[in-house]
Length: 402
Image (cartoon, rainbow, N blue to C red; front, side, top):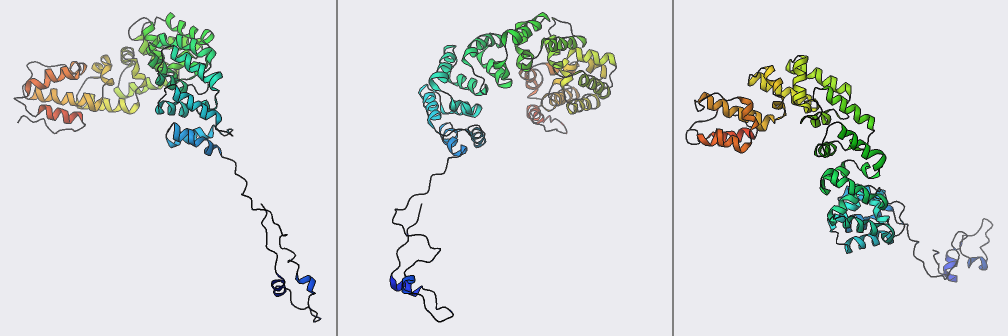
């Protein structure tokens, strides 16, 4: 806008006039009424407000990502970055009004916006409305619908989502399992059922896995449904090479253990097992065939269990190889505390006959308390207290009798 300046009076103009020139002549009276050369021209126009500044993406997105749906600040910023093209709040306001009218809670809306901010740009009548209607028609609750939309990252297409959910829900056993799978691998939504997913499931069935095993396996490794058939065949062959026969109860665990692990990593883990437990090739083969998840245990986990079971408990390496489930139990929560209890009972003559250490680990916590702790509460009143302390990570110097 232009600023207006007042017209100077003659007296003020004379006072502001320049001094006499070198020849002694003063400025003419006419020149005294002129404004300085650099002064803005006189104007009587009213003052105008400054032009509005364009809204930034963060400014536009903020009301929808923080006030309406209230996700965390980091989620709001992430959402704002994906809405940089927005110039008007019309569509987002319509989307939020629609979701509220459909009964979505604020946490449901937060999940939708945080998971897929671009849903705020959707057309309600032509896209979002029919999608929500179809999903709720399948039996999904508002919360489940919100979770599904949030984990699809823009791949929620009405033409395919219904048919895919109708296939995945029986495959995984429930809508909650299906949502877990989609959250871990949202490419399930965009993958072709007929050309990719169904042939992979058929290949797993041909390997001797039942529907329940396939559901559990694919929940752990959802990529099995979207990889190539050749990759699945290679994984199945690798699992079989561990000495686990197809159709056996352990075969699913073998496939799960080697899935996408790679031949080199498997070979390296076998070498580490031989070194850590001083096993022969045959003993490694026995241990891995009985408990394939051993291949995915961390080196630190294996090393600490080896030191405890061999050095402190005094178990033979062959004994461990034939009972590799020992290596699956928590060192702090089960292996150590139960060992201390059994050792205390043996040393104080509370056990009539020797108890196998492995058998004391296999039973549930309730059964262990009933068999090894509660019967001795009078003779050893502090046993339960000391056992609870051991389960918390405390290593007592001795269990007290009185």
